[in-house]
Image (cartoon, rainbow, N blue to C red; front, side):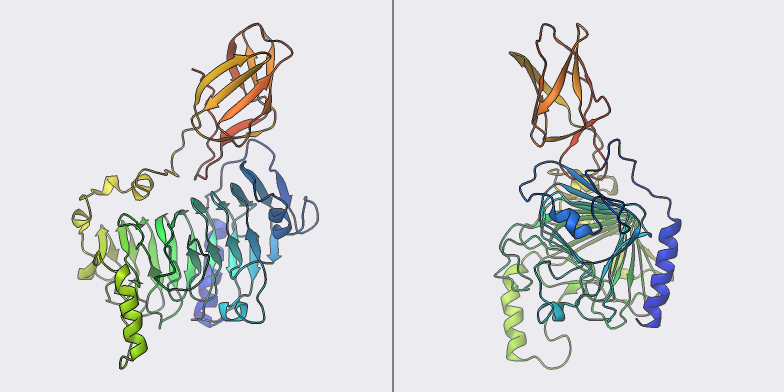
Length: 444
């Protein structure tokens, strides 16, 4: 590693170790535990993740104890939470350059250290690092093709390009070819991350909301640190709030190849940032244009139809502001005010990862010796919850986890339901969220 990156990595780990943020304790035992010393269910993160069926419909929790796990991980199941014991102490590391992966190192795990192929994935409280260590080559730490991905309280580190790349594309190709990328893109939520890398080291396709993050550019020759592709839907946006941008002398902020929309609120830039506003990439980056350059530009024209869309509010640079990030949020579509720019707004109201309200019971019905309890969304059952009946008896949970309807049974039912009791278990939302959303005990 080069000295600049070594110094930053050292500082980053020190900051992470002192960071107070910790996920709320689980009110139930994790489904699986990974421990490098053999004290858990698995010694390998990949082995634990691979043991969960691909057709899984329940929220599964994999707890990873402190240790350095020298491995690549591939997630193929939906509804998985991967949680570390501590942000600095739980580390998944591997050296993987994209060029090597395309050649002799190709395997069935993927091109990144953590490869996410499932929807509703949650990653929290650990470090993922691509240790390839060469500045300026593609070296993914996290690559994702899932929808509703939540990453929070993590360090995501690389010296290479595309450190954090969430690209939900149906064909699953790495190619930048605009024609091939015709499928809908995904939705991604990031909170309290520390991310570093080289060219386009955070580069979502689709909708992304990032808040309270520290971002560092290691490459003085990088064309940009941030990148966005929002060309499948005019509403697609990359929103960054209350975050800090830093980097080596002369680092550059953002660019795009296809239509993009960036919205920044309450962010700060270091004095080392270059005075270069975000813009579309036009080839060549330098020198005389070739016929190949002309063709690249023409091929990208169909995905650049909405113009330059970069909006700022209360963003400042340490040694003075540049004109291109002056307050202009009111010129964004529908003229939002800062208070409106939330995660829910980012995802057009179709997903609110910051919603802390638990699933609500919509209906209870009785048939024979069973009750069916219907919720307003799919839920996951942990442990053995039950229904307390008014005559003092109970109906025990029987089935339905992963759906919106649970069945509770008793030897006989001669009384209506009085209340829902978790009895040491839990009922929680299955969909990915930034908080653990436990079901309400209020009954209709």
